Length: 59
Image (cartoon, rainbow, N blue to C red; front, side, top):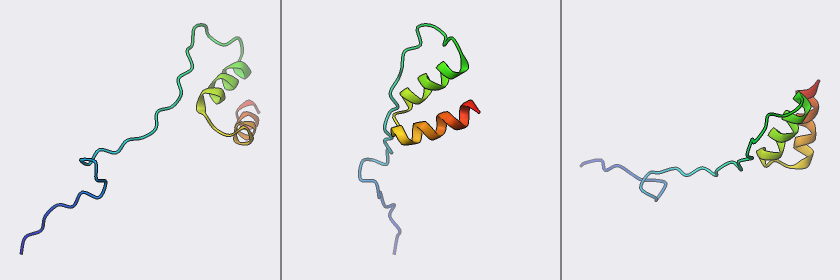
């Protein structure tokens, strides 16, 4: 009896992850608060989660 490899993903073994939205950085942010806002905007998370992260990052 021989063991054959099993491909559980069904797509040649490649795991595809969603890409994050890219926010162009034409100029550096004016303040740390602005940088946090830009980062959270590009993170693509829910507004309620962004509010919690913003509070944590700016305190």
